[in-house]
Image (cartoon, rainbow, N blue to C red):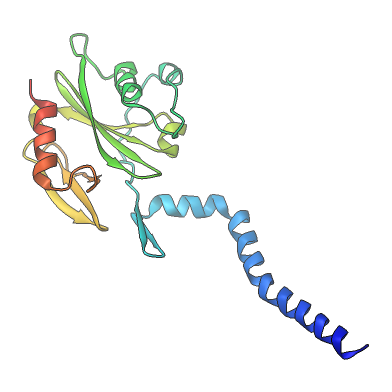
Length: 196
């Protein structure tokens, strides 16, 4: 074996040595992807290479809806329900009284993985969380309460995202700074949403 051939073999072995760990890493991510996804859904936020992603957690409160009606509502090409779809989910639920109707909706939180909507009816304010897990089990409606118990709202910052809490419950909901750069802008939008 000449010197040139041995250098080529050494170079190939070094290349394989450099590639083996990234390949093992990718294999492990692929093999355990469901467990990794479950872990990420339990996290409040994730920071990678200077970017931060925030995830809204679902509530423990279970709100029953008519799943056969919701299944007929199509999801848009972006993987989320449109504002019209969000309205239809509230209308299709068992939760509206006969004389109650949906008035308008407000998107307060938007990431590539989740969206949080507020939907006002004549009597109630609904909070809907749209993501892959809530779509699978038809559980977008996280909570609802009488509109009269919406205000006052409280604001905070958690995981570098804005959070808002309505007077009716002790649950904090994320809101996006790019949608509402100030607490006043969100407070005014909520007031407009619930006004009669």
